[in-house]
Amino acid sequence: MKTFKYKWKMHDNEIIGSRDCDDEASLRRHVEANGGQLIEILEVQEKAAPKYTMLKKCPYCAEEIQPEAIKCRHCGSDLLKRSEPTYISNVRSNPSHADSYRPPQGGNNGLAITSFVLGILAVITSALGIGFLLAIIAVSLGPGGRDSKYSALAGWGMLLGWFVIIGSILVAILWGSIWAALIFSSFRR
Ligand SMILES: [Zn+2]
Image 1: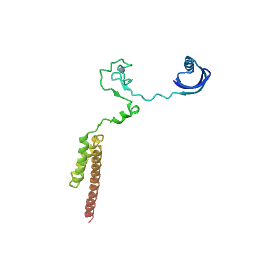
Image 2: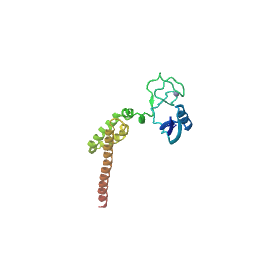
Image 3: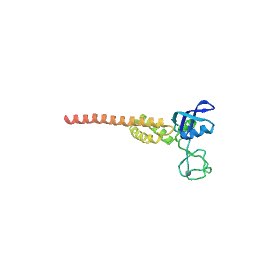
Image 4: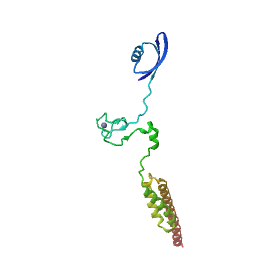
C-alpha cells in the first residue's frame, strides 16, 4: 500500500488529491470512477508499517491472532470457551495496559526478610563467634528473596552478611598473625 499525492481534473478544475492505493492503475481507476481524469502523480510515499496491534496468542496453537477473535484463524479453535488470553505484544500498543502490567513477583518474601534479620543478628553477634555462621546463612538465603517485594531487605541481608564474613576473616587473620608472631618470638628466645 502506498500513499499517492496526485493532480486530477474534473469539469476543467484541477484538484490535488491524496489517496492510499496499491498502484497507479488502481488510483487511475478510482479517479475515473469519480468522473475525473488523472493528470499527474506528484508524490508517492510508501505507507508506514502498521503500528503494533494488540495481538494475543491462541491458547491452542500459539499463533498470533486479533484480540477480538472468537475463532482462531490458524487452527480454527473456538476461543470463547477459554477465559483470559495471553497478551504477547500489548505493552507498546496500549499504554494503559503497560501501566497496569506488573511482572510476576518471583522472589520469596520470607527469604528476603530472614536474610535481613540474620544479617543484622550476624553483625550484633559477630563478636561472640556465631555471627559468622548467621552471616553465611544470611548470604545464602538472600538470592532467594532478591526478586520479591522485599528485595531491598534481601540486599541488606546479603550486604551485612558479607560484611561480617569478610570482617571475621580479617579479624581471624589478624589474631592468627599476632599469635604466630608471639609463638615465633618465644621459640627464638
Ligand atoms: Zn489457533
